[in-house]
Image (cartoon, rainbow, N blue to C red):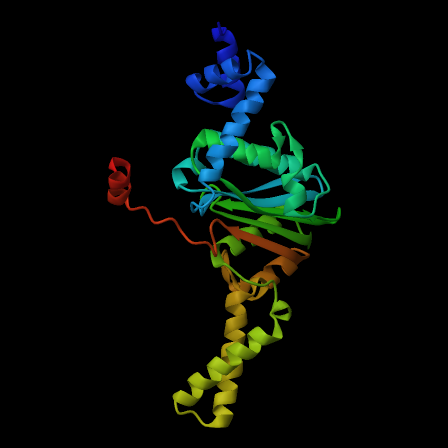
Length: 289
């Protein structure tokens, strides 16, 4: 006879259904620890069936502790799940666990111990419990000096996350820079960071455009230089017009506050990933079959 209190305790620990918990305790002769392992093994089996499904929704987040910060992204299949407390608490646990470590790679991060085994075990267990494929996609740890400030900004609750480091100035200025990056989507901090091959490719395209417009070679060259400068103002953070004051660029704004932008990391959830395309009619028919 399996004690109902033990079933409830196992359910509280694992989040599994009542029948699954009862069966696990039967299979393990009432041993609670063994039953947890049994359900985790079942969870792994369930999670593996979801491995090929698309998880391009989710949330990005930032956690800061003194002079150390982490920016990270965890994916789910649907936006609905990304608002689930189970999901958001998992992100917080992962973020704080990594922040308190010295890991540098995803492999090291996934093997870190947290409250529910390794981080990899945690993701697998939550996949089984929530019922969607979940994926810890990426992270980056940043450190700063005492004379520098972190700027962190989450847009739309974490669909876009930006972490900046500004030398001097204030935390408020650093956050303004992060908000700028969230809104304007720069690819680089300054024109000096743009790879030479990217600049040459852009010049080639712009030159072809000018020639096709029938411009003489000398005029075309001047036009290309002007358009390259415009290109830099679009893709480089510090050369962009400052969103709070279009009369100055970001570099001037930060300089006016005795600062300099050192680093910018921008995560947009699902960028570069294939998006899930639900066909509900097809899904219903598949279930009928």
